[in-house]
Image (cartoon, rainbow, N blue to C red):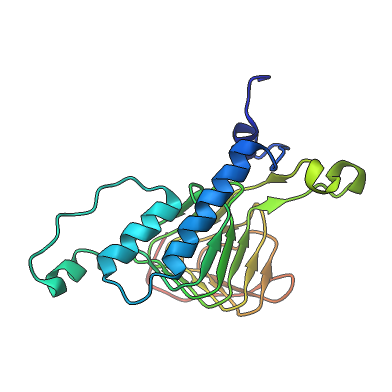
Length: 211
């Protein structure tokens, strides 16, 4: 696939060069979109949803405005709720389900796809790193060398505690809880608690909910 762009390689999780005009421009676009969101201030929910969709490049049209402001807010009750500030690299690789809550100071390095299932909740200062670099410093070579990534998938109904770091390639199953301050390096099964650095599964969650 000699005609692949660096963005194509990035999305496939292959080695790619990030400091090419296309990807530099993509990060700049997302940076400015995040700045607009973070600086929006006290605006209606409709405007926040619009600004968020600009970050993640979601072109889905907003519903027609309701005549009453309170009724208009109800139209967006199932939309994700993201407390500013948030910082994301590209935006187009972030997919959130309904009713997701992300607390302030979240960082998402979305080199590859990052999915967060419906009703999942984040504490403050959560970091999702789907991007990484070669271990060999000769290959890594600063900004002139290649990097790569692996997808991150977080299931529905999860609770991710404050100051958690989730590393490339991790899948967290439905209904799981990650304790505050944990560094998640490996998959966490559904309906289990994981804590620590590196995070380890400590117990199963008793719940009538099923996968």
